[in-house]
Length: 233
Image (cartoon, rainbow, N blue to C red; front, side):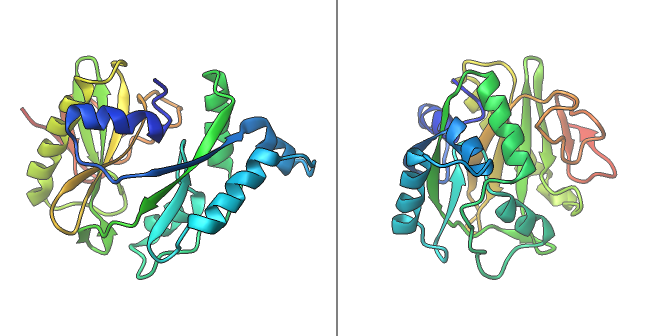
């Protein structure tokens, strides 16, 4: 299992009986072709095939497209500013520093290709015009949970939701073959907690952002804002 790839997580969610935002898996793209494209070289058949598939199936008003390994920078930056009234059109772009960093991590784990995906747009519950999202950090000795958006504190009333995220992550961990990982959850407008994506475990200086934790998540801790967080039994 590669924790960077969404397509590896969804079968685990099925086994753990976790609700999640579904995904339609598209064509695979060879990683070396992405680098060739960025260098202005030709001969990128798998990249061309993925582009044509997205042109046929991507519906900007109803779906998002993403890489199996991460969302596009356009989507992430839009959500970080506030919840969009309309979905941004996500271009087929590659020269995003974070995407390249994730590709390099994929290559270190012996992956040679990455597919494109489509997911339906799910309306989120909003708090101060930001989606209510959480990131859980699973360690061998416990699970930490943070609000995803550090610039928007969540009221204390969401502590119970954070505890629910921890319980869902415990279910996920029981079916996951690696002891350390991260998992993101969205609180949908209808009140359901949905698995968004998984990722690597937290390491200082690594790809996984600690969100509202000061430097490093602590197993058992809950952080609803960047200013303070507390332990919950």
